[in-house]
Image (cartoon, rainbow, N blue to C red):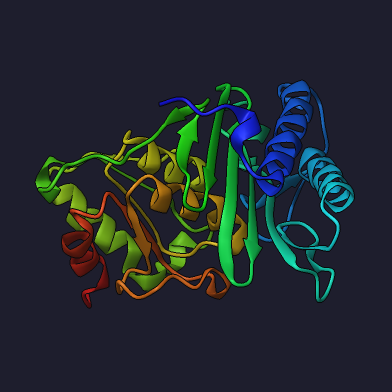
Length: 267
């Protein structure tokens, strides 16, 4: 069943409009000459479009939703005591964007009273708008989403991401990756956690795991997975606390226990 834009709440509508406009900004900048710098390490990049997109998003959402505060990738936390907390990633997949790989997204999530209520992920080059609203479901370009029904881990296709400090092998992520490969399970590495989580919700992959993600990476995708019928936790199956920047596991629910067992075991 398709869902029209007008049937969403004002919060979700604000997130949709913001994501679409920021996505257009990124689309215009894609493939052009722009400044690129490193936050730390040679691959943790930030471009002028990360900053321009974030500046636009914070200004837009502050104007459209009075009483907004933010946790954003480039500027950190801002605003205190406001009712609505926004998690904003202005350009998830910066390395892809900088290297003219068209897999990146704008990710926006709204939290009220400690509960995620709206989530939007927009991949402008793919023309895909993922939207979730608490209690109303998850949608891709208006079409309702559902996770896969795969029950056997050996029959799955998974997605993952690697930390910038992978050479330090945090949480033995290299060994866990090898363990899954040895089972013959295909793994995709797209370079955008927001898109990975959206793909779990869309049933394109059965699960996604990553050793460390920031709240702006997870906010919208978390709600998308849950509203599509999936499950998202830490690797230990405990409730995901996105401000902890810890390991994330998202699945269709059926394979959650088996995959969590593999990822949480000691090496």
